Image (cartoon, rainbow, N blue to C red):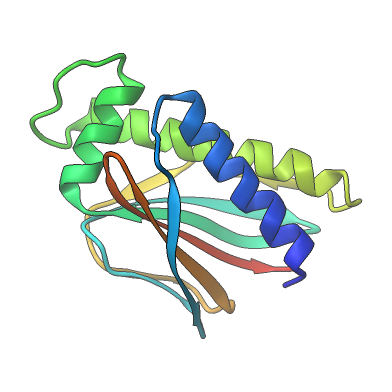
Length: 150
C-alpha cells in the first residue's frame, strides 16, 4: 500500500472524529498484519469495491464503543450496544469510509463503499495485508485497520 493512500485515510479518520468532539487523538502503535483479523470487543467494517478493494475497520473495547455511540447520538446515554448504538457506530464508519473514498478518487482510484457491518466478536475479515494503527483518545482506545488491495 502506498503511504500517500494510507495517509489520506488516516487524515480522514482523525478529522471525522474531531468533528464529533473526540479529542487528544494520538497514534500509539502501528502493526503490520498478514490479514485483517479483528480481536477487540466491537468492530465496524466497511467494504470497498472497484479500483480499491478490501476493508477498513474500526475496532474498540465496549467502553469506548458506548462512549462513541453516545457522542454520535447527541449525548444520549448508552448502557449497552443495541441496534441504535450499532447504527450510530456504523454511520461513523460510513462517514470515514466515504470521505476516504473521496480522497482516494483524487488519486484516480474510483471506488464504491458498501454499508457498514458491526460485529461483537473476533473475526477474520479478509486476506489482504493490513495496517493496524492503534489510537488513544479522550474516550478510549480505537484501532483503525486498513486492509486494502491498492
